[in-house]
Image (tube, rainbow, N blue to C red):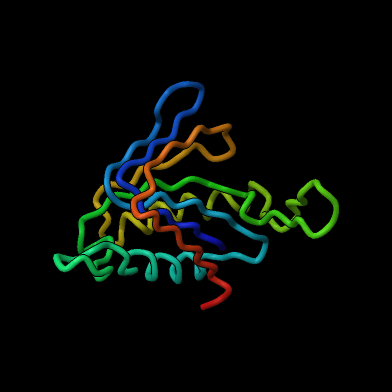
Length: 149
């Protein structure tokens, strides 16, 4: 499972011209699921994400976590995080899990981040053509791969 985390001042997602999720200061998380992922990967990522100290403290140092700041989260499913561009010019997405595996894990991820104490969690629509807009704060962008920890 891969989570691309962007620290944002604000972010929103729209489907068909209608805003379906919007957050203020916090994280935009693009979440990709691969074939071998299970709920244990979710637990690894959630624990890392909510405690990741990438918000500035009163001295301007990255020392505060999402929970410390009371930050908000927008989660978007993103199978293209598993794009394989080794051959040719057209990416292969065979590393991404099929929707019947990916969608329940995506939903579970959202449930678990709420249960971890994040008060406002918004989400995209799985499998939809979404328009995502954000103001990246910093910019700060971090990639977490559950296979690496």
